[in-house]
Each structure stands twice: as C-alpha cells, then as structure tokens.
Image (tube, rainbow, N blue to C red; front, side, top):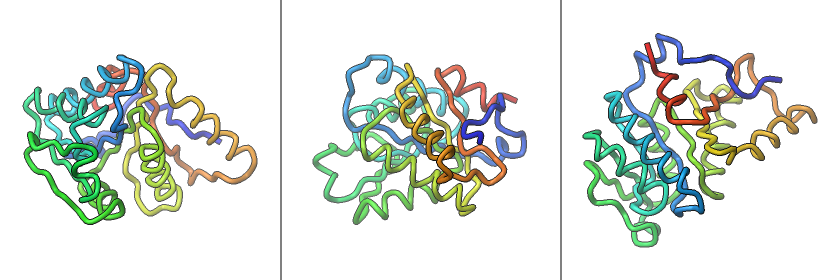
Length: 195
C-alpha cells in the first residue's frame, strides 16, 4: 500500500484553489539547525508564493521560525493559540491576526477550517497528534486536503515506517489515493506548487 505520493507536484486544479497553508511544528527549538532553518524557509516560501500562513500562534521553536520566515517575506500570518498556552508558548503578537481560543480542539478545528494545505514540520507529541488527526480524517474521507510531510534529515522516517507497518498488519487503509506528500527539502516543497 502506498502511503507517500510519488507525484512531483500538486494537480493544477488543486494549486488554483490553495490560498492558505497550515504549518504544524514544535514549540521547541530542537537540536538541529537544519530543522530551524527549514521551518524559517518554509514560511518564507509560503509568503513568496503569495499564500497565507496559519499556524499555532507561538513565537518559540519551529512555530516561531515558520511565522518569522513568512513575516520577513511580507506574507500574511494568522496565529491560533488556546488560552492556557498563551503564556507558555509566548504568543506571537507580530502576526497580522492572533486568535486566542478556548482549547486545543478549537485551535485544531480552526486551523483545519482556514487551510487547504498542511505542512508538517519536525516537532513533538502535539505535532504528531496534529498530523495523525488530519491523516485519519483524510483516510475516513472527511476531507481531500493536501498533507505535506517536511521530512528534513529523515526526522519523520520512524513515523513513516510505523505507517507502513500499520498497512502491512491490515490497520491502515488508503482510499485509492496516497495520504501525504513527503518532501526532504524546501526546494521539494516549493516544487509541489510549481506550474
């Protein structure tokens, strides 16, 4: 069973519908500069393509880097953060729109509703949960939005291997289409959107 798309770019019809990219990523810096610079460059690329960025609203970690990249490139950024994380993740008040919501469920739903494409940067449990939630909804035919896995330096290889294992054991069922695109560099991310 194919989990990762082998297409080189998004279909023309899909590209024309995309206005907003949602970035999931860690609130921590992580240990690799490649992850931080990759997040920043993804944010820049989103803005340079004329797309809006939606993300978790924090100013720290990879979340902070992706938003800074988009802002530095002149892009429009919307941050969405629940009240209880407003101080812990240090909300980014430099964004164009900061929405403080009641809880994580409202945060994730609003991020989902506002976006047509999701890019999953390196991160921890929260990022993993966000990724698997949109993948689950896609497998259950609740949406057909594009999910892009930014697998910088093989960070997400163990998750991809787990998904392959789930498929081999009969617990993961793709619905005649692949669940996500894997990119290993910012250049590959941008190439998905090229006309």
